[in-house]
Image (cartoon, rainbow, N blue to C red; front, side, top):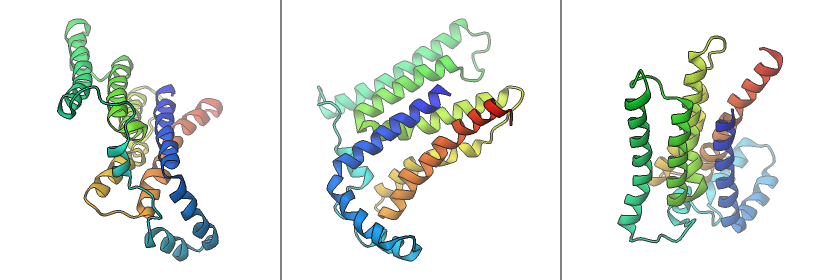
Length: 210
């Protein structure tokens, strides 16, 4: 499960960086959250009444610059897209040249090549949060598919669904409908729960055989 843990680590790096970039806002919201205790209605009020100066995830992704673009914006975006396109071409050529079944399921080696291309390009585009949001559903989907093809355990594709929450959250945020409550659910609760569920379930099965 190294690929799963790697994607989760990338995403966690993005969450930590987001928190550091919005440290004052995070501190501002913690006090009323602690005061609200465990009362659901009060917690919801705290998380929907104000943003406390915290960026929206979309504005964070758009604004973060892991490296200063060495090219004009359009050329930079084309270069990043070229990284992914190049990886797809390499995988396609390899399949056509050496594989007996060119249309067969994606292999782990191919997955690694594509994941590296996706991770690098999206990290350079929008930082680790965007990279993790892209990598998690891709890698979780591939691993679940591969595991189901083998004899024994057949994990459900439902394990992939929570890892898609950050992408859904970015889409909802982009159209302007978002609150801290929705962001907490989409960017923290669901992806972390989903990101831990499958690898921990696999570890338990490996250790105890069930």
